[in-house]
Amino acid sequence: MRSLTSCGWLTSQYAHENNEIMSIESLRAIGCVGQRFVERVGAILGLFMSILKAKKANVLIVEAVISGLRDVLRSHPNKEFNEIHGILVVLPSLKDLHLSLDGRRDYIWLLGNLAGVFEGSVYILEHLVDRLETDSELLSEELHVQLVESIVSTFFKRPRECLPVMTRLYQVSLSKDKLSPLVRFCLEQNYKYL
Image (cartoon, rainbow, N blue to C red; front, side, top):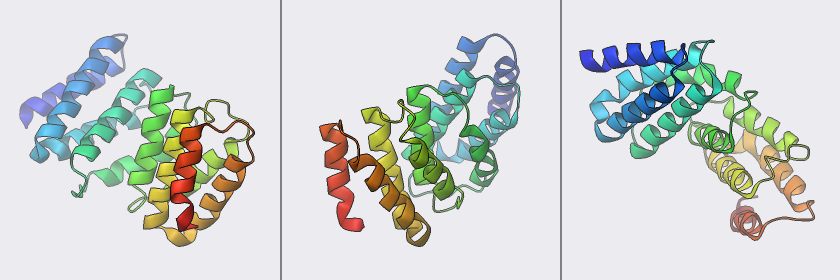
């Protein structure tokens, strides 16, 4: 545990300096530890939370943390970690960052998968659906599919709050002239829940 804490301290120091590549690689390695050793996930989530709370971390570091969170949580889908609540406090502040396509995809995935413990996810997803009409990057096939999947996942955890968001997603998506076949398929597969 002590070596992970030391590694976390070093990573957070690098995250605030100019050594981005080393920080990103360190965060990926820490995420791999979390995927393999469930007993270390609490400490890893604590480290990720401290980096996300730091206002000095740049977007690439934040993306590496979001990706690491996704990987760790995907590796342990049926586990609940107390440390996740600290991360939930930070999630809303990340919605306006200019993340890359992968960073935004991972962020949307987190919102859908944490909807059971994070009631704010519905409202952030609603914000993204409202931006779907004007944000060309959200119209990319990859992000659009992830948005549909996350909203459906959120619907199963919070049906009452999510139904209007899901309905709006379908209205906005189906009004598009050029809807990719994959997005259309994803929408059709999930239409039965409306």
